[in-house]
Length: 215
Image 1 (cartoon, rainbow, N blue to C red):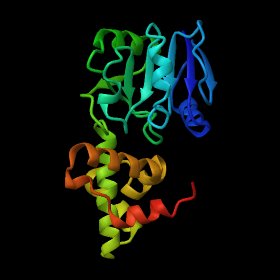
Image 2 (cartoon, one colour):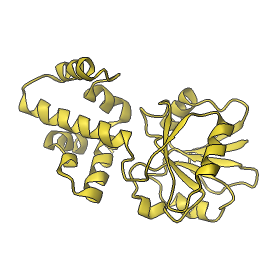
Image 3 (tube, one colour):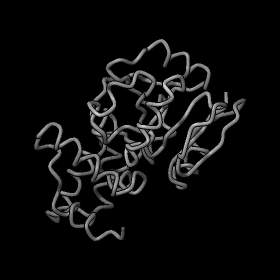
Image 4 (cartoon, rainbow, N blue to C red):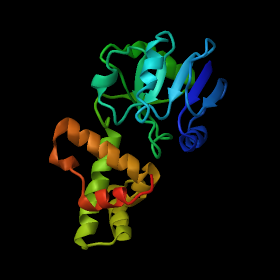
């Protein structure tokens, strides 16, 4: 396949290290201007941050798109049968199986054929803001920030206890660094807006650190 990958440079580097595209012709464009006639697949690593790309994809319904759609509500992209959501956030790109979701009009058999051609393991989940794994991990990170703010344990101790108690590969603050605090903040904000569930209300400490970040 001829695969066109678009997205931020840092995500592209992580994608190259985490995901095999052996046997396919893979090119990267940091900012997508148009989709050439030779493209068999588009992988959009920054679709959450660049929803305007949906307009480009709408004009090429014959080209499937695998996009990072963790923060955007499915209501925004549910009409596009050829667009498939994937958890391609930093820190998750190399996870197997890759978490994916269909739009309301999506075809599971077409997604399965695409993944088999790529040679990637995948897990199909219900389309939802935050998907499944990012939602859970970001909620755990948020709770860790509440604990750190109370002063009952250091961040290092929280990371150690979480790994020992749950057998997770990383502690919540280690996860936060891998995912990026901005992404953690935006996932929590998006899920809270969508659900109103108090479990996703931002820790004041997490919000403070986010607002102190350079943009």
